[in-house]
Image 1: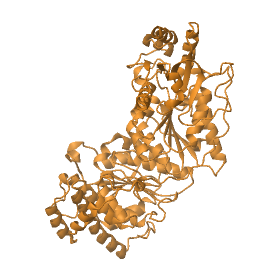
Image 2: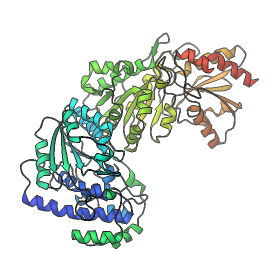
Image 3: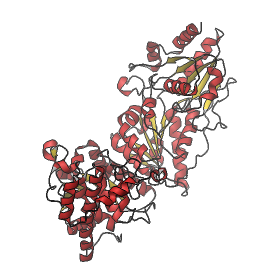
Image 4: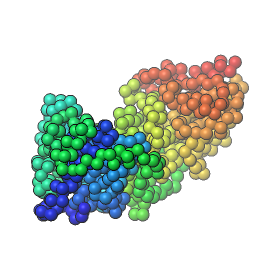
Length: 639
């Protein structure tokens, strides 16, 4: 590999080298899939000539694989991992023998779909239709860092049926991401057969209609491949290369057979195929090597770019202030973006919106720092992935949306960012019942439960504007994926018993922190919007001599139960949330109690089904989770 870039004509020497290497790689693909007795050889063989051309000439090598100014190669159809591993291994990114021998072996990094822990892989893929969105995110992060690199994104033709690709196409044209060159491996076959029969579409015209320039080539002709990539870099628009290819290219009995999309060769067929390719059949060597595999956990770590963020000075809202948490978020994020713009030593913060800037309070950033504001329109799937991919390419990404869109609708996309060890901050407003008259479809009463299933996402739910300010600054300043969730309504500022601000200028947050808002005998455990309602429950019960401890836990998925054990020793605990009670903080408390051997009687207060359309206070009454109903129920239980 020489990484000299594209331009001019492909030399005879380079062409001969690529043709020879392509044959070798086809042998690698067949060996690893036969050895693993699974995998996708057909598409790997139709894409390999394209991969090899890019890896030879693009500005990416084992030496600069972690540099921010390198070119990026995104492979959206991650099932072609045999081709990707072979191309990378043969270009010196790692020992190709390891990839062949350990392909799809439990504990190996050479998994069935490409993974970011493999040197040279930019984005873990496998969920089809997301690669172009990831490429867009990488282009946005490059602009924020004033870096001019090229991004090559490879896709299968079958995955063009996915709607998210349409979202990404429009986005790329809107922002004129001309440094993206997309390649569609057009072998016309998918699992169920011919793509025209499975789901007819006109791939070329769809890209042209959205404003892309399309170059059509023979995807196995190295002159045409090289010329197309060279031409793409002279065009001031995003370019898609439609590469006509052959499934199973290079082995006569595999060519144009849909079965080989995901069917490896038998050992007998492998022998015939390698003979046709003129490659030695040394499968026994790899069988022996495979037997000696030793798992190494360290190999599974993913490189992280260094991130430097200033958390700024906290804003304190006075006790007589009544505002919504989303406005406090808007003020905090505008402050943080301002700091990252004025101090060039800081990592850029980029915000992503889906036509809701005024509601999720990104409008201040939009007006004051338009270069750090990305408007995607109503394209949540694309935006979630673009923001996630940007977050591992030199920026801190903040994606703000309504709860049902930013969590429920984009669950799969957020899961993928988690697998990719992202640094994404998802900020959702309008969660829980605190939405208003929009009703069931917009009441995200499952956001804690949903994110419970994404292992590395941390969830933060602030109780008032002051805690919102601190949690936003905390999440943006810490590496990792965070969901900061809040309702819609204006809330009272939480105060101490003397009337002073509880979350004052001295309040510091760390994940899992527990706040004892009021001391007492019986614990009422709550978070978010319901904290102020919990204080009302306490006031009502004090009249009957019942003293509740109001415990606010802003991290409903993780906290140290032993910090509140003295309250649980009363024999009772109450949870209060406007989230489904079987998957919110009550579920966390129950699990932690069972694991810790702490026993008590638990009463949950929260919805058990979808709620109603109406003002939150009225819905609470219908569900009997208004302060009066909760106080009455607790009083009766304690009797």
